[in-house]
Amino acid sequence: MGFELIILTVAGFLTGFSKFSVGGMGLLILPVLMLAFPGTAALGIIVPLFMMTDALTMWPYRKGADWRFISRLVPMMLLGILAGSVLLADIDVQLFSLLLGGLILLALMLGFVFDRMGAGWLRKPSVVAVMGFSTGIVGLLANAAGPLVSLFLLEQKLSKHSYVSTRCWMATLTNLAKVPVLMYLGILTQDSLEVSLQAVPGLLLGGLIGYCF
Image 1 (spheres, rainbow, N blue to C red):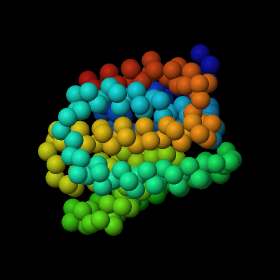
Image 2: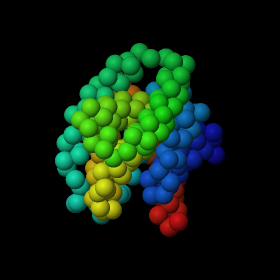
Image 3: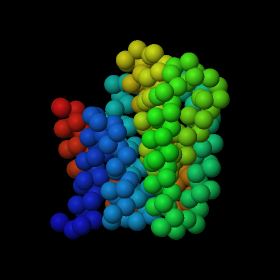
Image 4: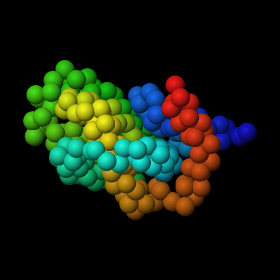
């Protein structure tokens, strides 16, 4: 088994396992992929994998989402994706690696800050706008926005089913919004999709283990 296939299998496993079990592990997927696919090439591989896990989890939770919160987050999320696309244009491998590390740290820092702010602060329009924008830009460049959205929704005191459904819809909408941007930038291509498919066995195994445990 070649090195690239090993990395794809590990990345697929982490994608499936993090979706169905330990969500925080999703922060590791892009750095792992970049061991074999440096720079933005990894983004074109990881997005189809995320969309596959979205499809697997969406069906049982397709109903019950709280669209009040989704409608407040999505506009700024789209703006964040557009801002991220400007940063992605003509970025080199070294700079992207530094940017990725910075964004992961930023996501962790924002999560810490928002966690200390409490539910009252997290309902303020300005904070919702920052959360939506952060979801877009961090989601596009680092695929690390999931913990931010989860934290935000946890503070809204939703029912368990509504929380999971809303989180699933936000993840799906964010990943769908990234597709045309990555295609326009030449990052998501037919070749990158063929590479993504090699990670599917690892993804299914990780998802099965995560679901069972």
